[in-house]
Length: 280
Image (cartoon, rainbow, N blue to C red):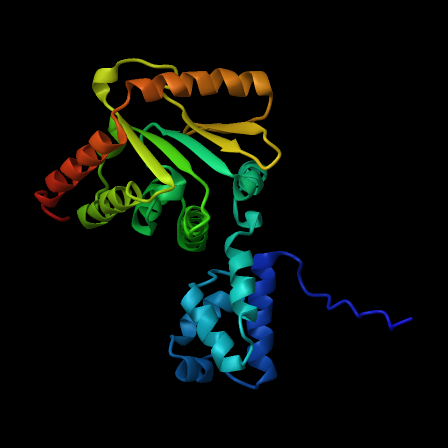
């Protein structure tokens, strides 16, 4: 019988494990943060934040470290797991995040903000800060939200259909440059083969989700679950009857919305108007 493998004792949480491995690999080579920075090309404060778990950095940093340490894709793989780690989200969202990561199809209705999967880092930072997040917590929440965008990237990305209330496109950020970048991102995403966007104009009148954002997830086992959210609370809905009820409301709203082609024109028109606004 082969000898029993010794357990490392290191963290099983992806984000914490990534930070531990970074610190371990550097110290094993007897390098200071400043020395590592000189050799790899990023500032020592960046590596310090990554090793403390305040940030996971970007994939280009993980790749550069893999090259430097001679560990092909090891740190990049740990980085991918860290970015997708549901432990970085607040407790009430964790089960939803686990299901979102497994979903094979998305349908979303946005009341006043673009869906999280379509938000830019600048947009996420301003709205999360408006909600009270600051400092390290703000950095982590921005990183967690923008990290979710990879679910819609790649050749095999699942289909995403979003209905955007007109209010989404008429509620700018205080930073007009960041707002223009968000509108540009929506316009770009609307051209992706797996992404379909509709704008629900004010002229559509009242409807069944007037103050509630809603995401539907189609899962691998064929089930559909829904997540309803407002500024106060969120609720994961798994009971099939309730999910079907809200999906019918969603379908009725889609019938009132602009076509994808007209919706893209609407987004581009908002971008043109934003380009005329002075930057703050």
